[in-house]
Image 1 (cartoon, rainbow, N blue to C red):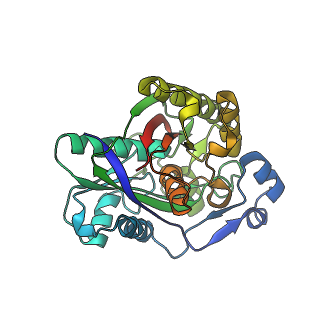
Image 2: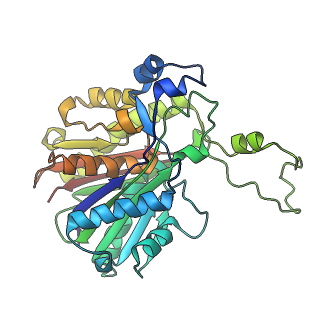
Image 3: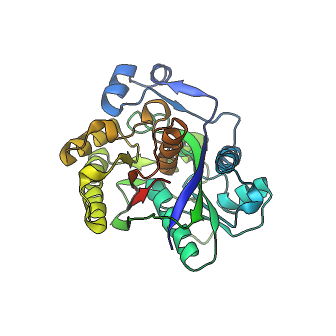
Length: 330
């Protein structure tokens, strides 16, 4: 059994936050951010919920596939920043679409979309599903320390979805991996208020700002940079070896949109034709696991993906998780 993508969709918040706007309360500038990241603006939720963005992205994917929500028999959502610890974001999507089918989340950070694809393929193989919605939805703005210019300038909010059906030629190759590292990129869990938790900070009078910072994302930039560049190169070479093709045979490279410097360094090391390397981060920032499906949707809607073309997907992020997939567009 294999799969193919029949429809794509995405949704971003209305509010655009530019680098200049960030520089009004951070010690930074548009030039500083753009030169180091390639990012000029990012979309940030104001009135929108993540549930609403995810459902909107799914509806657009369903419309593109020419089907209705009733035709879906599986929903898998990748998120690390959902509107709920429980139930799953996928359950909120199912309720919003009015469907009754298996719905659950995957937590693999920025590699989550590829993990979700592989899970759906497993359902297809076992005959448990024929048509799935694979969704990535992230509200990164809720887990940032907005006083930390090294991290808050990088991220944005958004959602993207693909209708994936059983049958077809994909994946030609797929790999999932984890190089365990819990501190390179992390967000602490909920502290809770159990009176029996001896590891808990006994200061119950922490300010709202202190509580928010304690739950915010932290990143060791140099570690993540080195991991990202090495991972992209190893993943692309691994996919090609598994599929028995040359790197030059791939038509599109869709890498996690973490940082322009990572994309440029990996592309140069692989000797890629830069016109084949997709980029969407300039206007969205890093939207975590939604980067890859958002980029797929952007290319598809711009008519840049042609039937039969080979596409390499590489996601990498906290964990440190990696998901890579070689697929044929149909």
